Length: 619
Ligand code: GTP
Image 1 (tube, rainbow, N blue to C red):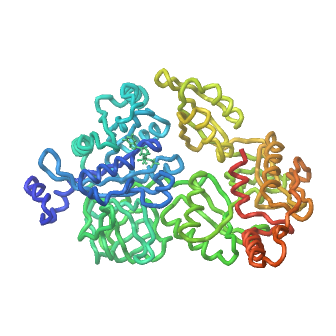
Image 2 (cartoon, protein in one colour; image 1 turned 120 degrees about the vertical axis):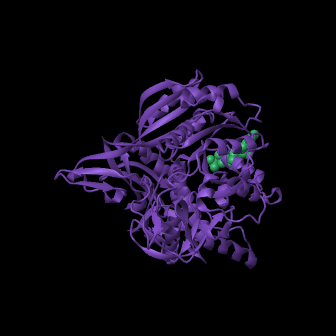
Image 3 (cartoon, helix red, strand yellow; image 1 turned 90 degrees about the vertical axis):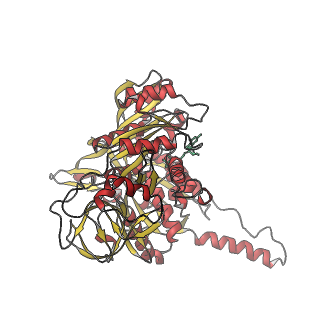
């Protein structure tokens, strides 16, 4: 029966199979890799090969649907999609694929997609070989008990070194080289081999025999017309429109309005069954009511135990976000609320600043995550914002024994009451070609780090295991790593322990007034250098003023660096003689427009992007 059903499935009139039969012909897998090793391109080929998307409708990197993703060429959100694949054994399989982001900031997206799968394609760029995140992602998949299928990708590249990749696969990842599939997402080599391997090597959906409905919520999205859409992986039982469901962590009940799958657009279907990855739209109204990692069950016949959820993600970097126009405060609040629904790693709470007014303190996974969120607020919600200097979370021990957490430098208690301050560190695994070892060591020392171990990988590359203060890698570490190693180095990290360090709060004063938005917590040994750079940058970025204005850096009451803002010389209309009124108007309007964009702090105008600019160039 199974065979004949599977054969008939190729035609569109095939009846819906019973759920237990369907599960045997279902495979759930994701693609994991180091950034830029070609996941999205390969996914596109898989969609094309299985006619999920016709070649005519195929735009490059189909699964990267966010504008920002296309522009930057990186995947930020994961994208589930279902494909039908008539395999060589004569059966048609339902393959659920999840594309995942490769950047280290988005590792939590990877772990979420892994929880919804039984197997993973591990891509290795044939020109680059195994990199830091290849290793990290492979370990994540292994820990979750997933079957790993190694794929050596981009074999069309002239620089492809298959022998090296095979050796690395065995030596670094301890995966037998004969398991590797050779492929090229670009030229379509090896696509059928990959699909056959998915069917043959990845086991069918697990935990399907649990007696009641259990579906894992692995993502959710807010849609202005349809409300909250939950992305789910059904492990056991079935769910369809009209049923009452409940969320196991809170017991909240709601009515199911629609269920469906992604092809890759949303397509309504009658029932979601075991092994299916799809969506549920229910009467849940508020974005806060649904928790990623929660288990959905039937309200009337609930499951006894929840599915294992995800590791709670903790933001590592904080900064203040403020609307440029104070009227936009509510708009910013709504934007953050909606973004948070799609992004459980983003957290925020309201705060106010003397210089910037009312805004929000926001927590992010890393700097790229922070930039992406800011960019999305600007583009998708049309709110102009400014952001303060990013900070990590410090633990401050006071003389009276209290320990407080500080994520905003202005909340650092009076130095007289502080016993010590600890900062978060990271454990980093850095992969680099041998010849850059010396330069890399210097960079790590400069960043107050230590190298705990150095391992030779394959004769040509080494892996450095090091400990670094998180604060030091925030701004430019990755860029410097890339430039030292001419792009051949890579890094992966996880949060390490807190460590006591000699840290102080540095204030920046513009025209004698402290600008709270620029306060930062820095290591004492670096305060002077950083203070000087910040003052120079700020003095440079603040437009010339009518009179001389000082920009100073101070620790406590002591000034440690100083620079001056240039004095204004230019009258924009001075070159317009006589009655050319329209030209004058134009110049004055332009000046007025420029001024509007500036945020007034005391008597000095600071352009809104000064914060970002200072931050970006503060290397
Ligand atoms: P992230 O989502 O940012 O992690 O990237 P990704 O792994 O999805 O990589 P993507 O598919 O965006 O490809 C990265 C770059 O490699 C692009 O410039 C692609 O055109 C190129 N590329 C992808 N696959 C191949 C391939 O098989 N051969 C060659 N020569 N180039 C490829």
